[in-house]
Image (cartoon, rainbow, N blue to C red; front, side):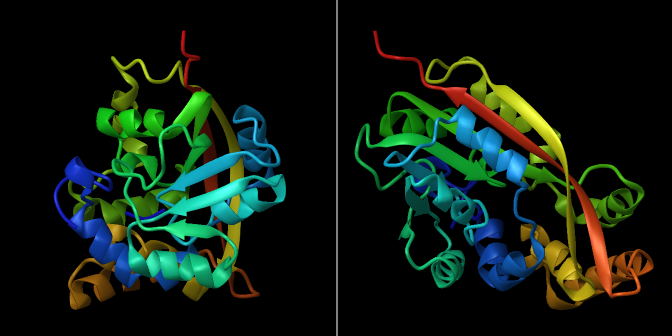
Length: 267
């Protein structure tokens, strides 16, 4: 996911959250090292729900470093990754040089009308969840096109709750999937039909340093002043160290959520 000024990624007039731009711009490498991908079950659900098949055009909005984008390559679709943060785009292209990657925001997509069969957003929609975004999505989708959104939620295990408590004083009003506020974008709108939902357990095993990177790549953490950020990450490292196995790895539990909706056919 990824996100210069004002509201949220793809915010009014195509502007993006300053904190997200600063944070993700500084933490692109940490994001790639520390963030989990998505389990095969989630990709399979998304593939079926969005009817992804060879030749279809799929736009990944807020593609970040390509965590979701690259998992869709085996479906044979024509992928377009849209990401407004240059450092994230560069990291995506380094990992997946064959994927078409564009600079753009959710409310100002560099795509013609009716040019996409599906839109996906991995770990991103909460950054730009509003009616203007849905209107822009409907603009580039063909009739009967579909929208899919995926999140890895860190859940409510003991380990997750300890880290959430450390993060709580720093989050402020940063948009978050966990609050459910993003759902309000789908109220009183006619571009998409009802949301559907599927959830599954997921784990991510990685070395301790990479596990610290996972939390250091959170936008508001990455954007913190150096000393304050270092202190927070040291406390997070101490929590993770207690959960580190003999081989030096930490297993982080997640719940992966897949949400999707269909654009009604034109009448």
